[in-house]
Amino acid sequence: MDVQELKVDGQFESHGATFPLILECKSANASLEETTTWLKENATELNQQAYQHGAILFRGFPTATADDFDAFIQACGYPNFKYEESLSNAVRVVKTERVFTANEAPSDVTIFLHHEMAQTPIYPSKLFFFCEQAAESGGATPLCRSDALFELMQKEIPQFAKDCEEKGLQYTNVMPGVDDPNSGMGRSWQSTFRATTRGEAESRMLELGYTWEWLDDGSLRAVTPVLPAVRDLGDGRKSFFNQLIAAYKGWSDERNDPSKSIRHGDGSILDQEAVLKCAELAEQVTFDVPWQSGDVALVDNYVSMHGRRNFTGTRKVLASLVSS
Ligand code: FE2
Image (cartoon, rainbow, N blue to C red; front, side, top):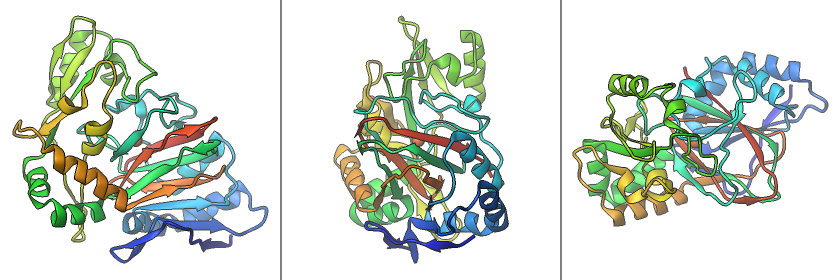
């Protein structure tokens, strides 16, 4: 397999690594089997590169279907992180053992930058995306180097960076009684907590350290335990590992008011100006993945945030979560 690094507009350097790393398959007519062999041989190095660079975009590899994508992920050797067992807010459709649709929310709903499931105590270490069909226009997956963001925050909004690091964050989320596919966070409480009765949901929440309130319309207001907002990456880097931007800017539907969705761990209200500044700083260290059909991206969930830009036309991006 001839695989070479590709440079495109918009990449940038952070902590001595290009973001994201883009690897292009230059072998004409490479088979899926050759690809999975190459992935297996290079799994350790690719894992290390994902951590250093924050994300890897694979272009020109022979991946065309959900099954090809599943084989690609398996070859990388990570254990599967099952959506059914996660506490994700998003409504998804399962495609294969490892693969599901990225988010069923409509094309005009922006999904703001976040670390996957960092608003819950259980999160994947990495995620994969696969572009089965690029949108007619828009639809990029923005990827943000969260370690670079935290450095910027320490310079530009030091008090807020300190508050986040020292106090942590706590999230409030109203979950509907049935899946609401019109919302980016419409997963029902039954599905989220794998419960058929309120009693089952309550014992799961107790286990996880949540507090809650049942609402008259059958929905559930759940409050997470205090979660860390900053993660030590183990090599001197720290990432802004949370869902602050997404919760503040995006957790809005008929049940949720974003200004009430997130607080510091001591119950104090977030400094709105600092939050908006933080979102602005994040855009400075974000790369928009210009999807082409067949592209696969591997994102280190501890290093990089992701989101979704609005789009027109049909966009089919599949995702998979892994733990390691
Ligand atoms: Fe996500």
